[in-house]
Image (tube, rainbow, N blue to C red; front, side, top):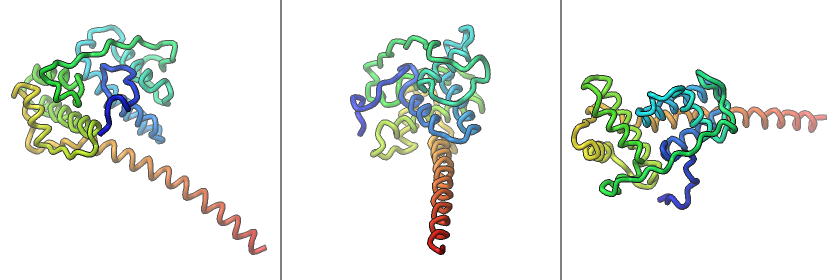
Length: 217
């Protein structure tokens, strides 16, 4: 198990460790289009975690500033609107959010899950709400795996925790895929590895060919 004391500090605590890890991984994606697409999906997730801030001016610009701040301004992506943030545009870190004592056993999901759950509860019933609940459950499963990589977590456990945290107001569809976010990250990691392996293999083969020609002479 990985303890908080051994982890790197959270740059902006309000987004939690999973968003920070996603942005950290995004920096390693070599394909520019894949990296840009992943960055935009992460910013959408960040916006869902802070719906109360949408009334602020330049809301999207602020989100991208937070994204670049978490990335330490060392990532090659382009915000759809506004200029690319710079270190001098750094936004002051929000104060750490305290966890409710009654839900301490769910701390590994992060305080942002409560915000997502509150938003889902306020939505009208229908496909859009069902899809959003599935995203929350997928995020919870990813958060649990990040918190404790050695412990197996089942969909049933995540569904039970979600029902508890929502006071029984949210239900996950029977055909929901709770590994959706995890699969996306795995696919991107595999594509990145294939790309790296291809570059490594092409280099040595070329060098070996040169060595053989020299030996024949």
